Length: 514
Image (cartoon, rainbow, N blue to C red; front, side, top):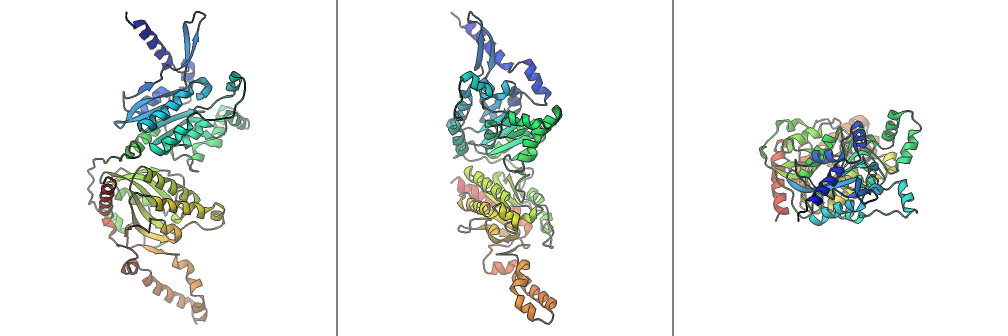
């Protein structure tokens, strides 16, 4: 006897699942400029690699004789797939089914996706659109009572943050648990104009919309409350992109630098960029005038393998650039001062960003290259109110706790506690300094007149005396004087920086893999 009848029913149920919330709701999703969940999965992963798990899960509707009439699929899809030829767990919320609310589906699917990721040691990608597994007011009526909130499987989410790369893409309005799932990631992205994120639920957003008139203004209300302009600048979400396609591309790119799990090594890539490449433009990159700025991103493009710099968190904590890149094919993490923002001074948000990024690099065993031009922590009342010193010390602690190799290139300034946070001074300093180096416990220009107050008051010509003092100190502050005392290890020709960084990467990975 054949099982053809049962297989026919299976195919029928699968076809019903593929209809998602039905033609009208799918059309409404597309009309909002959004891809549907199945299209997103197909666009994200390697072609043909997605194998869905629990496809026919949902709520079936039957006639009086028990015959299946229709199925409301679960609003959450997941399965095993490949990205860049490597296995991952890929998930997608289906907003066409009650906005992804938990009362419309099977909570166990979401838990299983998290468990699959950490038990099989696979990266997990979450495409979140809606409440992302949260409940709705209808849940209470169906249950017949209210309940103390709990998040099923959140412990598995926490385990994944400790064991595998977690990527979260906000692809629509995400509230409550959906917003929490975005934040619980190693790398997150929002689509400008399409994604919003709020801790509150739809009622609050709708209430805000009452202050506006018309559907367009209601959309603006959501943007004002939790658009990408807000959350990619306060550090809740890493990056902002212009389209869903760009979000998928960035997710794939981020994972290309990552190992599949903690304990595995990230992969070296083939490169045709010579390790001994010397860039003439580096010689004049740093201006002689200490008040002039220059492009640190231009320096990064010249120093790392061509086309490999992948910046993360560009719009927040802007005094330090954080990025992934490659040196001689080896993946590395980059910290780089940005003198074009606050002069490179670390304020609270920058310190928070540095701490988080160093922890990411250490967790996934990526050596760190630090390009330093740091005049210190931001000062002033606003900086004090923000608690800058606490965040700064936490960033410094992260650097000292990191166990991956770290190399510094001191390109210009390194002052105060923030300047000393460039590396762990209790370990071997794999450090090189440019002739433009300028360092100390504090900038001499800022304390000169106080330190020499009595000399200046006693001088017949205070202005002339001040110039004499400055001339003497310019010689004392020469980086070559520091090198004489071995307070800096090596002063190098800036054009030699890439070859030396590539040497560092080779040695660092030799150590990591030994």
